[in-house]
Image 1 (cartoon, rainbow, N blue to C red):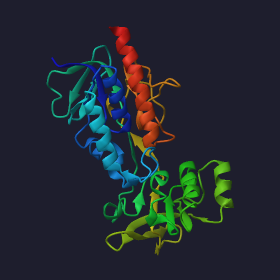
Image 2: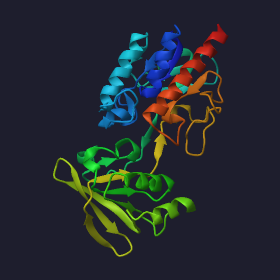
Image 3: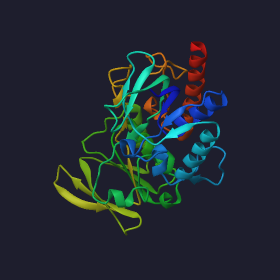
Length: 319
């Protein structure tokens, strides 16, 4: 039977930062980075982004994939054993924990003394016609990550959504875009009162109610319009925009621990304040799998550091 001291499930900034800290503490972990887990390549959501300008230490920016390649090189340097398989089943009922990988669910389980789950969360997408063509070429699910990219500067932009996140992203984008349209399918915003007031007071934001997006359009290289439909008037038309930002929520990748650890109503793993500890001793959560507020590469790395230190302390106490 294969046994690990610490197993990391995930491959983004949180996972690799935890691996670096554990490796330097002479507890080299085993990382299951996944094989297109949740439809995302090893490296997590950053592999789907273009240039990153807000990660400290890179004044000229760098591509998301390059940042993850560097993180992986660093974690491997300190002994991280990376396995390109997806963990499909995890049993937390007793220690050592048991795990199985995809296509090997009937085989003997791998056991582990501790688990750091850093499987992330995926932005919900609309799957519009043209979306794949213009994803990261005008379409994004993170205004804070991508809003300052040159293709959006002084251009008309659109945000899909009517909640607090959509309002926040619309306001953020007014720093860069010439105008920001909020596309809302209902006849009202569902955001908090204070957020609605801020949107109403911002002259660069126009809320388009009773409207749904139908299609992403462009020149084959970059987005230049979005097809819309006013559901109240049953009218279809094109809105010229150079950026389309989704703010319709995220889905945390927590299916393998569902029913085994405390989560909030949205499915994010609950952690003890100021730590990565969960309701299950020996299970630590880091990154977007437990962060429903910030969802940034740098905050993920920070919680990865916490998980690495917490797991090190847990293992030391068991020895």
